[in-house]
Length: 187
Image (cartoon, helix red, strand yellow):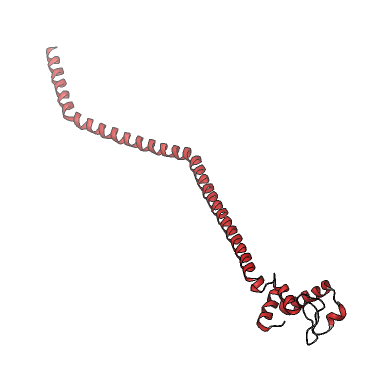
């Protein structure tokens, strides 16, 4: 039994030496495997967390983008209203200045009358439906072909309708007729 005990002690000693010899390499390999496994778990956890956060954040991001777009639309609408208000103020100021100029200059285009038609009527006849000039032209707009006197006589409304048609047919508008009159002294 003593021999067996010595053999067992020698075997135990040899195994102990082998363990001491191979144990650090084995522990190192186990530690490396453990580190690799932990790194893989952390990477998987990080990817899972990223997917989870992306899924959780998506509605908030969509809402933020919608709010941002609405804010931009509201800002553009406010700028448009501000521009329209400014334009209305400018137009009102322009109208006021035109009225002021008209009253200071004596009326439409500095003529003393309120519009192109009244300027022509004033220059041609003094706005008198019975007026006749030196060459026989008749009425508020001085018709020279004789048609007006025979068809309308001194009826102001009839003469006005006749000259409205004449101005539109020949010149396209009263303003164009007045421009022609100013350049030529007749129409």
